[in-house]
Amino acid sequence: MSLTDNAITRIRELIRSGALPPGAKLPPEQQLAAELGLSRNLMREAVKALVVARVLEIRRGDGTYVTSLQPRLLLEGLAVAVELLHGETLLELTETRRLFEPVATGLAAQRMTPEALAVVAGELEAMRAARDDVELLVQHDAAFHRAVLAATGNETLVSLLDGISGRTLRGRIWRALVDEHASERTLAEHEAIYQALAAGDAALAQATALMHVSSTEHWLRRHLEAQRAIEAADAARGAGRPEAAEAERPGGPAGRSS
Image (cartoon, rainbow, N blue to C red; front, top):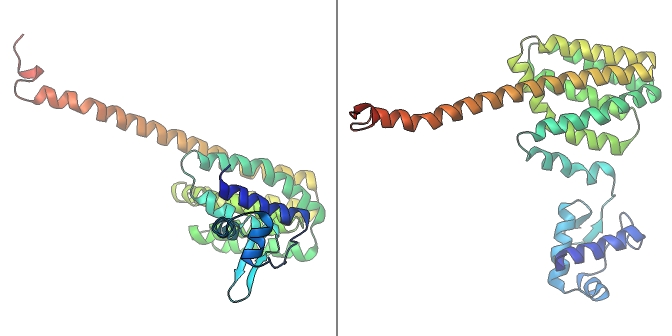
């Protein structure tokens, strides 16, 4: 563990122990550094890292405070980190979504209020109206799922899945662009989820959500396999070009006498 990591750990321990609860103001830098046995430089680096992690916030002219430590705040950076992932990780994230979202949808069916159901219905209607506008359709698709998750009342679950789905949005846009029938299938799948939620049927809501997410995952897996096959074929052709060039070159194999 580096010295900076050790400093971060020391401050986090103060927060975990309750010595610095959510919303608390940190002691002056020099005082806190002395109490923890750290240099002021290490203290500054640790504070900077915890500010980036949304654990601390600096209020100009006032001091440094512990944030609310709410899940939506602490997990906000997940979407940013996820966006930096590449290649096969898109499929991994879709698999992760499949593990969490159907169960969450079943929970939402148990806890759904009329007001929450009305929000879900509104997003479904907006999806129908945007069926010919891929990007708008996908935006309302994401809002539909966010409204469903919000009905669980579990802020941690909402924040976690919202971070994951930020990346899978690209996959859904890609799907709609290359598959002309995707919009109709997407609408039908969301309609099934809505009807299960409206009926308050948790098992059916979980099953319809699983079918929906699995459909996206299977489609993405097929397209990634096809993409890999194309890349492999291109690489094979590229590997063969030097030989072809050698055969065409004066004095090359084609120009030599046996």
